[in-house]
Length: 177
Image 1: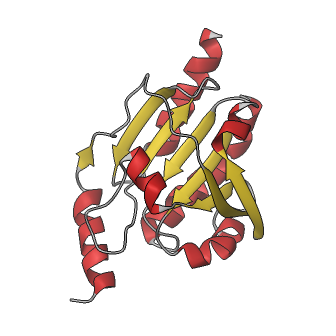
Image 2 (image 1 turned 30 degrees about the horizontal axis):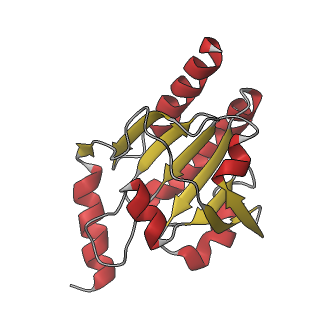
């Protein structure tokens, strides 16, 4: 079995099994700067800068151009205008197929939000590593308040539910303000 086949097999198993996110609500989100793409153009994302504008929806996904990650990107793209109305920034982050994120940001994020390349350090600091060769991240979504505190953390290999859960958390944050 080659590495890609092994990785995809592990993703399939993990997709069927919900898990708990490593960082919990109330934890401080580690700051990071990551290279990425927005609308097919190079982009650098810094969490602390984005938090100055409002909450951040940070979602990790295993790899660009896989079926679940593509569907999740489409859902986040459709919801991005609603997140923006609430003052939230959406950023997708992956360690898989990072050489393809420029095209992925244009085609599947539909020019609506940035997608960035996660470093090994970032994956470790957020504790979102998949137990497969290649250093891919699992599917975990966070909502982070402007004070860098985690408001919501959700890990599930199935992409369904990530957008609705993060939207609920952003709305609850805004309602509490």
